[in-house]
Length: 170
Image (cartoon, rainbow, N blue to C red; front, side):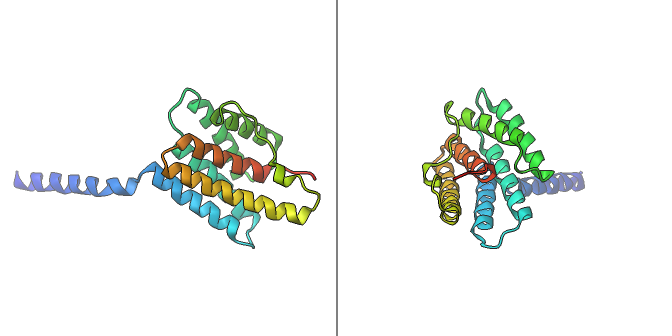
């Protein structure tokens, strides 16, 4: 009998030890966002790295999405786009449309707009500005997450992904 109790206690100890490894979704999302940020800070990132980073940003948004009346629809749309990224389909109209709907859900019905700062005639300055805006969106998402404003954090992540996958003409 003592042997069974010891085995049961050992099993319980292993289970309890594994709980921290399962982790807090917020911590996992924070790690993913930091990974995305590191990818976009690297001046020599590859297409595969960008694709993976965008999928990570979407995964982070799903981890921290609060339970709302639109959560199921949001998840379905974002999962579809994430699968498109897994298939290396980055610039599809369908993907941008799904992301646009997801953005509307987390932004109180507002539609996504190209930032005014990107409507400049110099393409090189536009790319530098877009990278700067992307970094600000990721920083904002982290700050909102740490402040407990998950919906705003999700909005900034979706904003970031849309900005990256949307062709911008000057």
